[in-house]
Length: 127
Length: 127
DNA sequence: TATTACGTTGACGTAAACGTCAACTTGGTT
DNA sequence: AACCAAGTTGACGTTTACGTCAACGTAATA
Image (tube, rainbow over all chains, first blue to last red):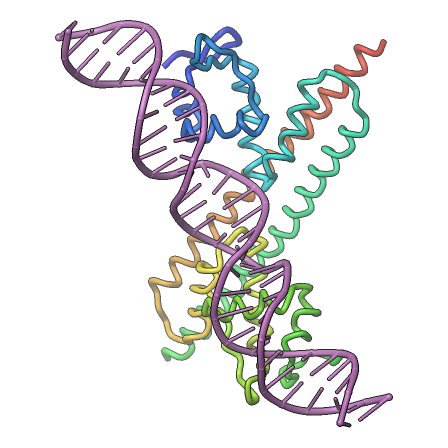
């Protein structure tokens, strides 16, 4: 497989492999307005910017963002303009993700504690 | 509203209020085998253990667990037995949650950096 | 007694993010 | 020429976690 510098051109299955997703997913993202690759006839050609965009989409997914939310982020980067309103919206979303993260951290700690207690009780019964 | 000690008995809407969910959700959890409240005639009565179970369910949700996954955790606690296999499964799931957490932490850091860069570029253009 | 609040059981609807065909085209290979 | 791999466009199916009626029961209250 080729390296990925800023001049590389990818086919749809190239990208699918690199990101471990299906081509169906990639086409779906396009239909939802998150990607807009060039065409060579009817075939899609993906460039570096599309690669970056896909990375954004998947990062968003890991943070629990919807595709609609990631689309805003992508549009913001794509526009090159200073849409202060959109910027604030995205920033807020990142902060929300961060707060969810803190909550989850707390949840995991408690879960581990309770699992420990459970084990302890079980061991106690065995004696 | 009453305090919640270990003797309190709740109606379905009591619980719904406390956890800020709908009664529909609570009934759904029961139909999925996560709750099994007593009955007074046809009405459901929830006790302290049901309260605890609901707390587990919602904690699981925050961590991205499916109801089926939370059900395993609940069954484990409920059985009081030492099902080592089930224990391992649950433990693994907690570890997975923790790894996802680390990944998310990383993702958020990068997002914030890229937002910063974006702002900087925009400011540069404005000059 | 009529109303109101709260509860119950079906049954069908919904949204998001794809999966899974089917039918077809295109370009390169044997 | 025949074939295969890879790509394309519909179109319908799937899953999870409920939402949203409808139709009914029950208990307290005005």
